[in-house]
Length: 108
Length: 116
Image 1: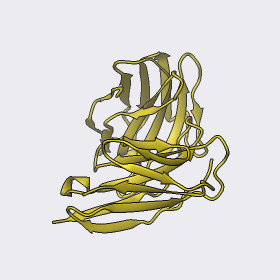
Image 2 (image 1 turned 135 degrees about the horizontal axis):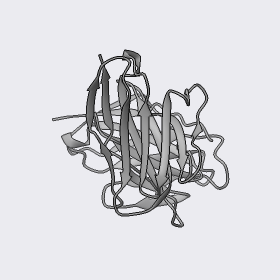
Image 3 (image 1 turned 135 degrees about the vertical axis):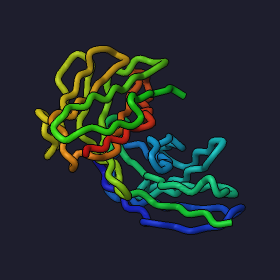
Image 4 (image 1 turned 90 degrees about the horizontal axis):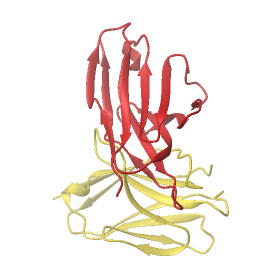
């Protein structure tokens, strides 16, 4: 399973766009990149998943460069309720190993 | 999306007793379920992988005789913490994987275990 590296914490303000980058230098050919969000005392919630280029859904965008050694989760116009821990995961859609995650704090 | 439930959502027990936690996939069949443990301010740690009708596969360092996992049906897996001690106090989370083409994992809401 590919190891991931992401910032331990980030701060931003309401209404801003937040980009969280994750490094995964040893990603395998059949690995997908998945991002989860977790609030305190809750289970992780799926945000977005991609393999290459760009994926967009109603809550976020995921940018993956051609070499796939990194990925960036983009949250448009964050609100206070986006304060959470965000996990970047790389794998072949079976066993998930969680890294340390990024603790995102949104301020008014 | 698919829904996974856990019961109970929190439990307090005395040291030395056993506690059973249930994980159910409510609207889909899950051939594989996973159990995680999470301590405060830390990431989720995978404990074991549970496949319906077979023995669970435990991660290194997880005592299989202490954390008993049963996956008797396609919608239910149970984790029993036997002879619980205060150091077993943690947040336990299960996830269930669909058997469809995408093999997505859906997580339960977690169970807070406090051992006195």
